[in-house]
Image 1: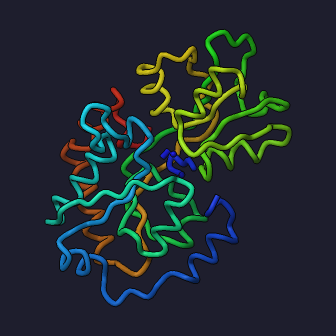
Image 2 (image 1 turned 30 degrees about the horizontal axis):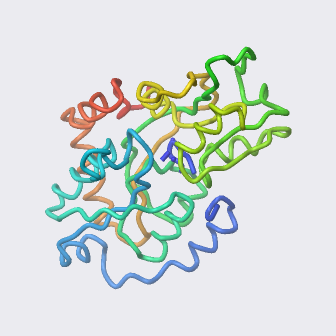
Length: 269
């Protein structure tokens, strides 16, 4: 889920380096650069989680996908002269689906990590964020770091960077969830002691949730989120990077970020 994972990294199909290395070997040969392939089709196939507000989720009134990632994806498709076609995919399988060619790109807060870069190419970053804890409102314990959660149960997104971070701390009991709502419900009901997620998502969730939860400490480094796609398309990468760079330079990404988060998350702090 810097979740949207990584990305920030978030979300175990590709959680292990061996699995990613295997995907890199198994990537299908591409007859043409993705730029030509998608332009011929006239459609850019875009995968996203669809359950990760405010990045990408279904509007309860219209049932249509909306959010920051949706706006960014539409911008990219429009600038490329293509029609966006969205594919909602569970996070745990989203990178595997990209490797098998089910869609062209993922716009769903995928963290740019060396491990993932072994299997996929990435755009330049379009979001910067930091991991943050969520705890119950009546929580008396003070968790200033993940180390403080030894002996506790921590909820994370399945296959996310947050899952990797929590599992790297000995003594933490990690419980993985396919989507954020179930994670936060278990937190509110006391089934877990804390949740770990994207700091940008935390602010939105707490603003719009009726659950008795509150923000906790920020517990990790700032992470970069980008748009992954299969290797072997340098023309597509150049076009994608130019679109995102121009959007950063002219303030478009900043405006979208403030619209959804109330802060500018389009640049590194």
